[in-house]
Length: 145
Image 1 (cartoon, helix red, strand yellow):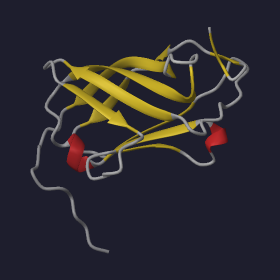
Image 2 (cartoon, helix red, strand yellow; image 1 turned 90 degrees about the horizontal axis):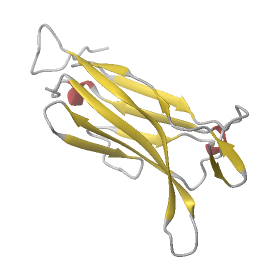
Image 3 (cartoon, one colour; image 1 turned 180 degrees about the vertical axis):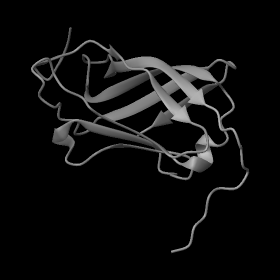
Image 4 (cartoon, helix red, strand yellow; image 1 turned 120 degrees about the vertical axis):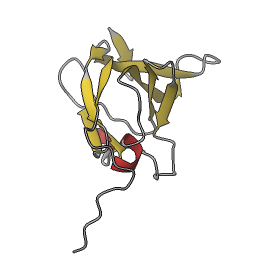
């Protein structure tokens, strides 16, 4: 069991998911304590990192400000404990792996102890499977209207 700011937090949970190649992807979750109360994520940052079956590593952070390839955010109000990770179709279309293993971590705004650096909490881990497109297109769907 982990504690932060006097709250008892749950151990990291396993959650497996799929990404459909060439489709937009959205993962949304709410981080809660052991009493199912949302954790206030004010001042926190998050990172989702994965290693693919092709031995490629990739990392996505809430500190990113270039949203052309992904957007990862701690949603407002931060007291709701909500995180959202977006991948546009243009990004998933370029994925060529078939599976990956990932970790999702949070960095608290406070030090673990004086001189020990910020507290890092692994909150989620698991497997990602990429569902391949049958008709891989190099252009995205573009409708007017």
